[in-house]
Image (cartoon, rainbow, N blue to C red):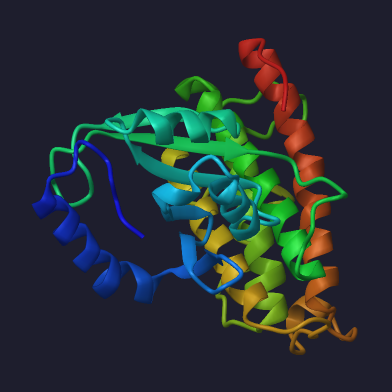
Length: 289
């Protein structure tokens, strides 16, 4: 396959080919599309929910190869992110037709080269008809979707609203995010793998949610995103039907399977995202998914 973009010099093509062979391919999950005779016509490289590379041979342009690769590589993924060179309007249009929206722009690429990048993202609620390689993958897709929506709703709040309360129960959005982070940590780290956590109930003080001293409104969002990566790491490290190890989380009951554990996490997120929806509407007037 050959890169034919007009903005690439022969030297650029050589450098990109070297980067792909030595750095990208070994580090990414790769899917290849090929003809019946085995000739490759396209490939996609992903790292979690990020698409890091998608190439289709010019001879196969317009035949659905790129969209098929993207669909296959992101099955069950609620959020997909990628960067595309702004000088490549064909690629930008391709992704936007598939529902991606622009979330930002950088003047240079990750290696400092003068390639202006558009940052694109697509969010979608998993559908019952979506194919999924396993029940674990299906449930992770729902957990990721709800977590991402919580983070987006939180980011849309004015800064003062993040630590204020609009409800008689008195909780703030920042406290809700901290609770969700601790909830995931309790079920997956403490419960499922019996990690030694000195403070599994760090979100509760005197029977209500609270932020630890020194934890700010921005800290809770970053911590929740990081906890999500840890949840996926744990869930993907075990096979179907795997049970957790005995731990204090189970209070003497048999440990739950990974599927049952994730289903409970989905329930927690669905409930609390609804709470946050109400607060965001009261604070900003905005509604919607």
